[in-house]
Amino acid sequence: MKHLLLSAYLAALFCLSAPAYASIPPPTPAPVVSFAGGDGSSLAKAVVILGATESTGVHAEYVWLGQHYPGWKGTNQSLLNQDGKVYDVMDFTLPDGSTHTVYFDITDYFGKM
Image 1 (cartoon, rainbow, N blue to C red):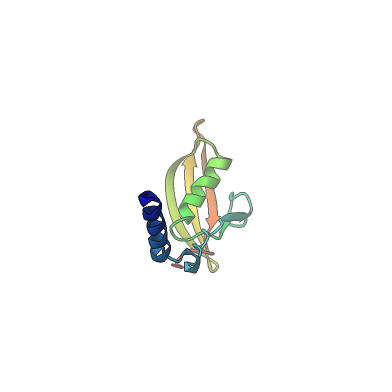
Image 2: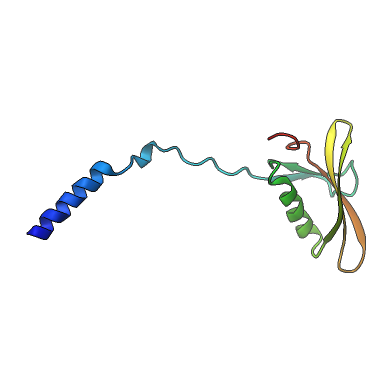
């Protein structure tokens, strides 16, 4: 009987002191990054990164490069402003020794915190 009363007391105490979880708003979902544009072989065919942030944009570039150029190793990364757009220019080599350049249009998120 003692245990039953103690259990009932603890249950009531927990219910009275439990936080109101229903009043806490759900977390904001992480932005979904997507790619548009071309194959990145030139400014006119730049890979457009959409939905990224300053902190996720470069990672998105690396993901895209890994999907399209497995084994890539970066040699240079530079920023280019042209015709009101901002581009990240990635120079890299592949395991076979070939060198490549890919242009990413980062206008959607660059400089916007």
